[in-house]
Image (cartoon, rainbow, N blue to C red; front, side, top):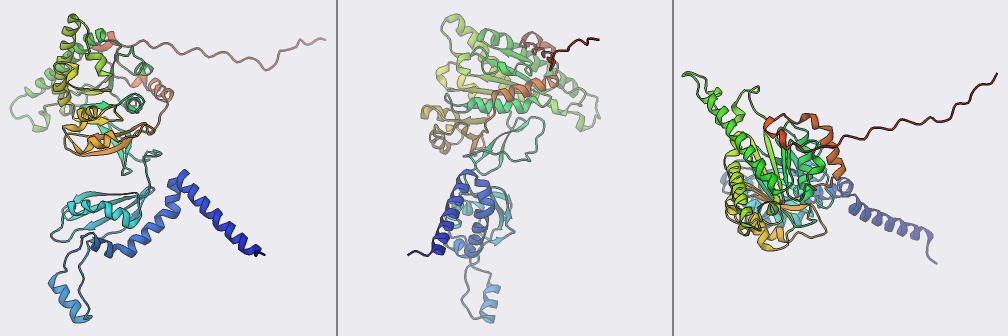
Length: 458
């Protein structure tokens, strides 16, 4: 007969294993904080020297140290690993700094990141160069892109919007001052609209002029009409709007030029080549132009439409080439963007520094976004699964790239944010004719009485 105590112990052990497995799958953050972090720290401390030696990250000790060890202990002198700093736990992993030994470089540690991941039992290991001789290891305990939770502290600033989460658990911030123009590609249901929605909702809370071109009759950008200063919903309206933006850019250059035509002896800090050097009272508000479904804007069917298209492409190229100094930035979105869109399309794409590629329908589309700046990122973009909408590969002309994922945001929530921040839209008189119509909010119905009054009879 089975001992009841043994059965109870076995049942308790199975229940504990089941609870741990459920916690790891359903609540990875809680699992990491309670189970994964202590186990990983113990494994790291216990195997640090041997792991570094197996990964080829150790060096021979200095001669004086070898002589001292032989003289005092008479034991064999072993190679020395990089000096380890304090382990700093986080909600998604842990961080640790290493002081490299003479002759080592950060690339040596980065090349062993995959080996360190398996040795310490974590989801991923990332290496970041801090300063000469010091690197930071960021260990991620679980897949943070499976269920996105944005960090609480992201340090928002003017024209800086935390729009997604990187695979190393750091917020991906869209910084227009650093990367003025961006190209966002993605197939249907890839999460491209979610990225655009998150970006507009973040910019709506800042004193920034938002302009939209949505040739899908405005179905993507019309919900944000309360915050938009101008909106074009077809190529004909876009052909009228773009020259106005170019004229606004030229007027801003005239303002900058007037500031440069100062008397001799003017302090250097008062001479500028962009709007950010102007006094705050004279500085015009920055403008962000969103172009959704750029193919609908550039595709033509007749000769007359071709002439109009060439003019629009020319205006877009001028805005991309000269807009940064005038505080005008482009966010171009579409499913494809290549030479098949006509003359000037490739030249426009070259001016778009930032690149974000969601799931695409073919490899050629990924190459359009990332092939000319980070060829190894093309494979990562082509391997994005359909069941993970919002997952994308982000890169820029520096050659760096990373996987990101945008958190889910309801269209109603983003539209509500735009309605609540409509008063923050700067006034640009030139864009007034293109201001989208916003229907008035429905009047609140008067509350019905809880009961009907009865006359008092004497």
